[in-house]
Structures are given as structure tokens and as C-alpha cells.
Image (tube, rainbow, N blue to C red):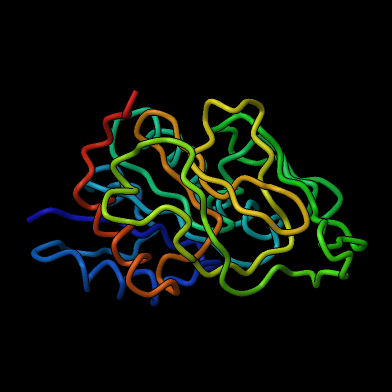
Length: 218
């Protein structure tokens, strides 16, 4: 039986992610776990996350999961980051006066800003960015299979990823300005939105992930 490990460091929407994976993963065993052995032998691995980056990184490090996530990223096993799990994969976050992250993908995490406005109307935009927003795919990737261009996904976040280069960007959205909402390199894919809260297209992304062998489209 194929297995997917949802990494449990106490800071993710674990139940909802696991239930979504169980719904689309016919014959797949979903393990919510902090056990390195289970994570490293799983066929697919998900790094979820909600909450403050300092707390997330502190728990990831305390449990030794920083090294485990790096091993997964280097092993070729398909690895999916979700929300703060995506941000944790970058080099550094501006949250909590600056936090070093995992450094799996090159780039930083920045704050939207307290004076964010709509570029067209001038209307003040609320932070956190919360609700449904269009996702514009910028590359052909197995995880986008069957998902329409500019499909809407559900977001809840005050910080966004700023990759070091455009080559890792898999999708963008707009909230005051264009920003990156999906990144990928080799067997790693990560999204800012919550697929488990995004109805049909979110479940389709999880299904695509479970069917992905980790091969880069390039």
C-alpha cells in the first residue's frame, strides 16, 4: 500500500489535510506523524503549517524535523508544502523580527504591509489576506493537471513568498500587487493557499500530488 506522511510538529491544520488526502487517495495510507522513520519511508510527504513562523521553526528544529525535511527534499520523494509549510521552505522570513527557515528553496518571506491598497480602486486591503483568489499557473506541471487556469483557491495569510529567481515560480495571484503562490523545484512543490479548504480544485491538487512521481516537468 502506498503511504503519505503528513508531518506533525503541532502547528498545522493536520486533521483537515489528512481527511482531504484520505478522500482522494484511494488505497493510500495517510500517516500523521513526527517519526523520522515513517516520514523517510513514505511514498509522499506533506509539510503543512499554520501560525507564527518563529514557533513553527522552533518546533521543527526541536523535533529534529528540519534534517528530516531536507532528507526528503534530497531523496526524490515527492514533497508538498502547504501555507506556512511553503514559507518554511524558504531561506528566511520577515515574521517575528526575522526567522531563519529551512533553506530548501531560495527566497524570502515578506509582510504584505499595513498600508496595502488595491492598485485599481485605491481601496485599503485587509491584512491578513483571507478568502478566495484566482491562481494563475505560470508553468505546466503535473500538480496543475485538470485544474483550470485562474481557478480560485482559499487563502489565509499576512506574509508572502518572494523567490530569489523566477525559475521556481509555478503560480501567482494578486492582492494589491502580483505575488507568488506556488513554487517548485525537482521533487518539491509548495503552495500558499489551502487545498483542503478549496473544494474541488483543491482536492484535485492533492490527488495530483499523490499521483506524482516527483519528476520535474523540466
